[in-house]
Amino acid sequence: MSEAVVVNLFLTVRVLVVGGALLVLPRITRKGLLFGAYVGESLVERDAARRLRGRWNRGCVILMALSLLVGLAISWAGRPVAGNLTGTAVLLLGGLGLYLRFYFRARRLVPPAAAQQAEEAAAPLIGGEPRGVGLAKFALGLCTLAAVATFVYAIVSYETMSARSFVAVMFVPSLNLLFSPFFALLAILTAGAKRSVRGGSGGRSIEAQNAFRATMTNLLSWMALLICGFFTILSVQIIRIGRSEIGSLGVGIWVMAGIVFAFFLGNLIRIVRGYGQGGALMERGTAEAPLTNGLADNSRWIWGLFYVDRDDPSIMVESRFGIGYTLNYGNRVAMLIVAAFLVLSLGLIALGLFGTLIGGG
Image 1 (tube, helix red, strand yellow):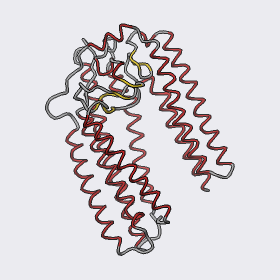
Image 2 (cartoon, rainbow, N blue to C red; image 1 turned 90 degrees about the vertical axis):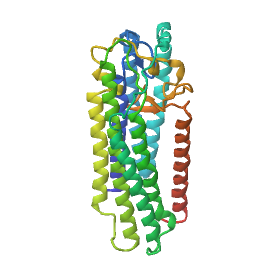
Image 3 (cartoon, helix red, strand yellow; image 1 turned 180 degrees about the horizontal axis):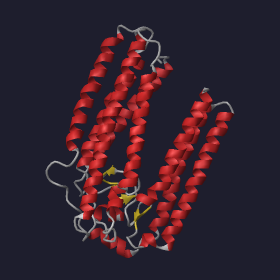
Image 4 (cartoon, rainbow, N blue to C red; image 1 turned 90 degrees about the horizontal axis):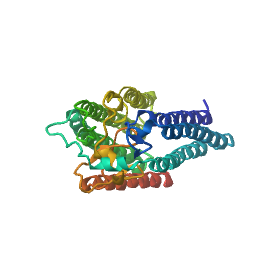
């Protein structure tokens, strides 16, 4: 297949996956939440909320079509890579704009009773070792060890390589050193994330929260290990090419990439179908009970995306719109994690651009 066909195929798959996720999210969120705003358990079933969800569906379909149209048009004009990037940008930025539009519409529906619900006490962080944290700690240790070993191996091997810049050789090992331990760290934080249970619902809501949290922890742990394996193999293959031991990356690296993608997508579908966000699908029979303050307090959320509470010791809390958990941006430790990740990521981007400019591919 030509480059244009491959690039356009990737764009189409990306639009279908991301657009499909946007369509599904309002259907799997916890009852009482509407596009990132807590409106109460009864209001989400009323006509106003149904109309919003219907308009959201139409907006998502239009956005998907527009993203494909723009991307493919630029590709057919002879610039497939630019078309791929532009179509993806339209999809992501358009999705964010669409969400914010519906978030503010949902906020206008919030009744006074929903605001009072914020006074309900939140479930405390559990004592002892959370489910899945053992695998997460193992993943962090193994990923860190493998990433450091790959990094050192690349440094030692550089002198034996020909026609390769130091930046080009070290870029992928640096990616490994950043991303694989980061996913494992997220798994550890997720294992101890704050629970937002339903008041008066007995143990069913807590059971759902614990099951969902453990599943997300295990997913992130295995993703860390798979990402580490992928980057480690890729690093070694690049070094072997630099030594003239092999002529190409080989089929194995693409097979590994396919395994990582299939594992992530398959488990994401399993979570969506079996759990719902925060274990929403497991709360049947207790979903009429109101949520506690982790998700019920609209004043603690910016745009329904960013949780900020300096009095809450939690580092991770359940997301209002999406899958999984988000950071408490009022927590100093959480902000240090964000700052460190951003600095390192920007440094890697600069390193990659520098390597490209000096011809170190």
